[in-house]
Length: 115
Image 1: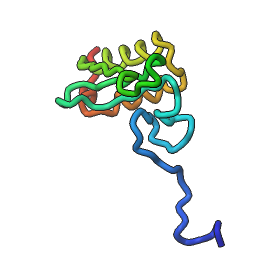
Image 2: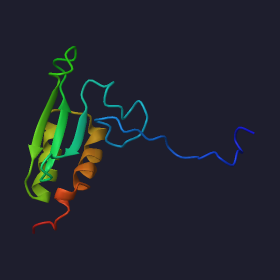
Image 3: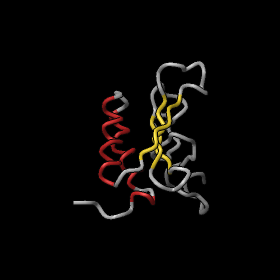
Image 4: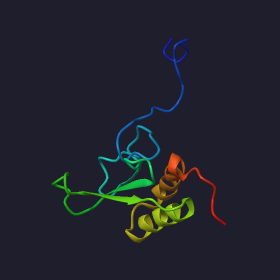
């Protein structure tokens, strides 16, 4: 009865927690648990994206452990600086592609690529 109910929805459990790039309710993508996490949001004025990084220092003080960086360049420069920021600060490499995909999904980055 438990596995063959007509109301059962077999799909992933989603989450709206901050710094959860894939929006999945799992340990791997949870932004609260890990020491170094990355989140990508739309800027307040709608131009560009904001990259939210959680630093290793200040883990006991959550108000000071986050750094917000606004990137309001063209699409290609935004994605490359996002990639560089994650790589140079030695964040988790499995989050790099997820952060790039999240940054490219925002409306500010939907214009045509220069080139």
